[in-house]
Image (tube, rainbow, N blue to C red; front, side, top):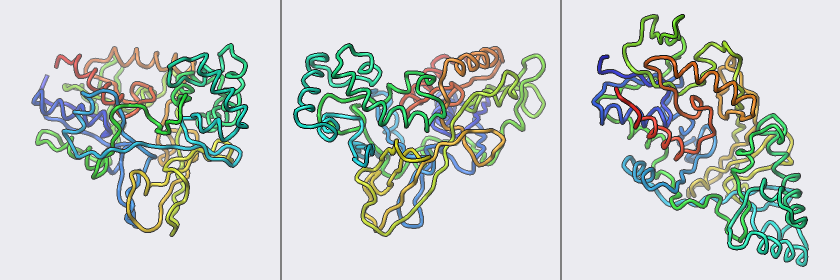
Length: 384
């Protein structure tokens, strides 16, 4: 085995792995990135109006894990930022995660007091619960409140976002946004909630800034990487004599020999208006709107003192690897898709020198901190 390593993909996982291999193991690392920029879906830039925007949708770093927080702080200056999101239901904007203000907005004073009382009696000192827990609750008042939220938001948003019914989607998706038992409006409850002062692209660039790391952009790895007849990893037709860390979709690596894994993609409609503010919060979901799911107003993410405002309307669309203008953003987690992924993963694990990782390689819906955690976990197993 030579002292080289190849990383496929220049997102957060690929970048963290490359830095470790270069710095801690002394390897010469080459990164092949299909796109024309570093950073994967965390890529951001300043638009023509002087507003920093996230090209692939909003990213807010948050974690409970001090090790992860300390790691990111090594590679850039971060500023505190607590995200407050909203959802428009029946033309009323309520904070999300849903909280006691939501109850006040949609119920009479007497009804609101009764719902809060039942929540207190049932959940005691707990500060939140998932909509799944509330729907399964044996208290009819609490269950009624949960059904209201499910019918007005969760079910509609899920159907648009994932392209499947709420009954088919893995329950972990429905559990991502809790229902709060207080007036707390912050979207996340994690101890560390920050954003990079100079943007995510600069942050990723700092991670990659090492003499042993070389990034090659506009490289389609699957034109040069394949699995041979004997489950041998080939690079440009020759056996791989170096470890390869692959962060792309497994079905594409194996040429769909067991079928296609389902992903959802996004289409963004970018707009600029010469107004001070477009919507009440930085990120607002529109579950009842036709076709689109949410709008992100970037001058509020974080707050930027600049004239006018740039915002992006998100439209979920199916992903097909044959369409070059679409990215596989989110794995669609159903019982059937996870079985299919397991078949691909078993094949991948049997290939020498191949390490599959990241949101696509692991077929998981990672937040940024969990993506870094997954990279750390993989690195701890290496015996190169």
